[in-house]
Image (tube, rainbow, N blue to C red):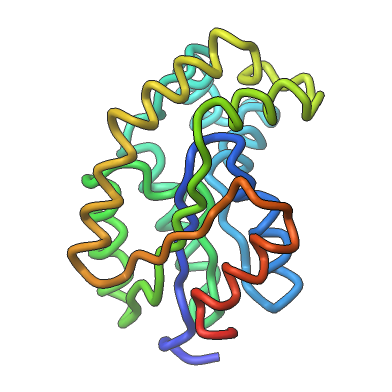
Length: 189
């Protein structure tokens, strides 16, 4: 693939099904970059990034932009010329600007931003029911993650809407219906 390989972003609250949809797009050839998975792996491996990020993650706070941007930029370099799906990044307008700069340096850009839209009550129920036992699935941490999402991540909706890149998907529907909507939002790609 060339430098025009698509870069797609999945946005949505924690528990919205972004990861599930990302897995399905991986089956279609997208390399998935999940900041959550990258950070959990770094924490489990005891890397410097993992240690730095751990305290933020345990409190339900966003990991600082400079840590996230560094790990994503490194992964984008590794995946040069391949279709990429970003799951959980960017989470702030500052990160979106940093991503745009990193992609521009590589002659790439964002093709589409898919917002997997799910009400908070549905999100809370899904997280309670998924039973993964993750440290960041505790009810109080989930409440804080949703507060942070609304305060810091929702401004990205306007950011990408203004650039004509945002595509809304009803994430409260069943997984297959959401997948069909995601595919349609990407023009069948």
